[in-house]
Image 1: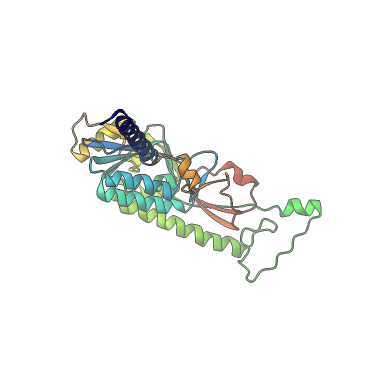
Image 2: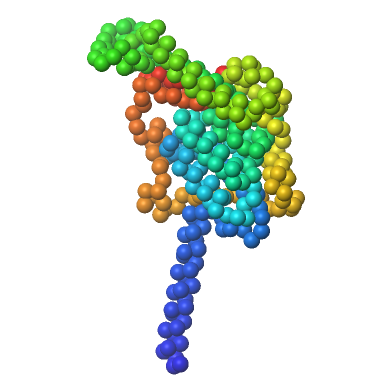
Amino acid sequence: MGGGGRRILLVVVSLLLVFTLFIGALAYSFYGVYAQPKPYVALVELSGVIDYERPLLGGAITPGDARSVFDIVKRDPFAKAVVLIVNSPGGTAASFEVYELVRELSREKVVVAYVTGYGTSGGYLIVLPADEIVAHPTAFVGSVGAIAVIISYKGLMDKLGINATTVKSGDLKDIGNPYREATLNDIEAVRRLINGVAGVFAEKVREHRGDKIRDYREILRAGVYTGVEAERLGLVDMVGTLEDAIRRARELAGLPGDAPALWVERRVSLIDILLGRTSITTPMGGREPLAVEVLIMWPLPAELASKTLLVVSSGG
């Protein structure tokens, strides 16, 4: 082969090498980690408010993001166990969808949930399907219940001489209308809603915790407890650190004590954003608030104090 042919071959090989490196980097941006050559414990972070969309600023847990990272773990035969590092006060009805995704994951892998900061309301709901729940001693855990906060500006509007007229098809159509006082029918309708949400929540606790719960009457008061108190009540299996949770995952999966623990995440790349593969929105979700918004959250977000809506929320 002449000098010109060798140069052409060198260029082709160089281009193939660059292309291979590009594809590798692209794959890493999508999946976070490669399949490991030996069994390991996958570490997955679930942090922030649980909602269907992720805000532009701040973290959130969405069903779509949870499904993406869980699928990575489920496809990897070397991921023998999963530790979910949870720090969430709960959120919207999306909490029930994330709960179902965690339950599906636990059917295929050993799952240990570690509550590091908040595991309250929807944040507690999503850890229920785990094989074991570990909480930091100072974590906040619980809030199995529901409350309703109805905000009314009627008195202020009267003082300002502002009158609002609502035309509606039924007497319950504008439940949560902040421009009038709530009626007894409104309150009773909301009570049915929150009792329904609280009832489903309580059923999930009974299904997964069973007789581990020492006192259901106490739990259903919707109180929030430290990790130490939560262990005493049976809401969690033990208190400890992340290392304790990883150790339990290794033991439950039959892995050796030196099996690695590796972070797994679906990274949001520029290509994801350009192709619309993310759900980044404004901090309020890019949508108008509903007349009735059901939340499974504790504590209540501070911005609700200035919102003209009815809030149905679990909490203490």
